Image 1: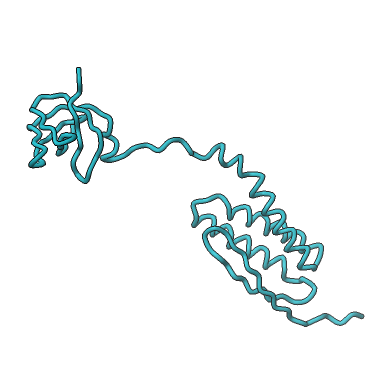
Image 2 (image 1 turned 90 degrees about the horizontal axis):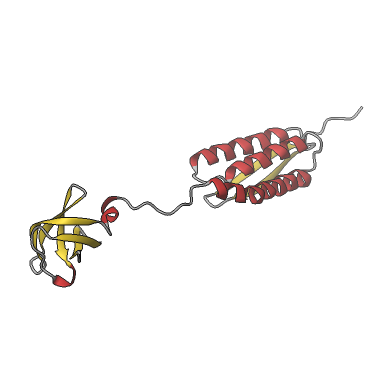
Length: 177
């Protein structure tokens, strides 16, 4: 009759990704009795990490840990289990990268706030005196402080085009008919 082994091994693993570094100290009984539980915990930590991050990377590490957990049920060799984890995670990450890029929103940036008026036309509602930085324009129903490009003064009622935004002022020029 074989006597049960009570020898305890301690291993330190370093898992890393773009966002953080996780050091996990694994304490297990020789023979891999508890390794499936350790791989399950690693998968759970990775899934929580995926929830907390914006990327779609750590999810594949969780799947790799689950595959390593399945392998741990058949072998107690930690090198084989870790190899399955690393190789399967790498394959999943690189195999799904084109798929993720295809469906991820990578279109052109949408201009918002003040920058959304650049290039639009409006009308001067208060004379623009560029020397004294006074004047107002109305663009899409909104009133903006404005100065003329190259210190040009523009009269009330003139149609203008917004060239840029500097601070809180729109830099405008008269629209040529």
